[in-house]
Image (cartoon, rainbow, N blue to C red):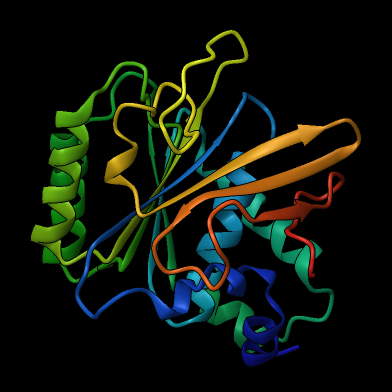
Length: 231
């Protein structure tokens, strides 16, 4: 299977990520769930979709190793397609870079320093950032505003975050975005929440500024692979 076949068959197309708002607009996306429910698997699918559309993706893994993060990509890609051709696989590898941070060490200043080194040395200039493991409990609105400013300065189109919600914390925003992101949900153009119900795993689209489906739509996830199922 080649690149075009993967793009057209990808269930993520309903999110309209390839029709994103007007040219040059910066966008923040958020994937939320309780711990261990598959946020990284969704982020990897989003990253792969972006790479297939010709973008360069920097995956920032907080509290994970490069090897484990790379394995997640290989695992998801294998589950998505069994007969991926070598040309497409090689192209995807060139379009992705993984950067790791220890927990409680990540900051805008450290990310900016490492990113600018990559860009100025012409090593890698990302179009999309994936920030997996960001501490929303310990960082507030100003920290997010700082990251938005950084993406504008560096010409990054989109940043996707994962966030851990807590069963014992019932707080939500008016749109239903769970704590700890309920007070800053206005900063995100897209908010997806993994919602397990009995034996069914759902992906609720709480907000999406450029989706092909309305907010409130639910996608189904394969609980054994965490792949978004085709409608």
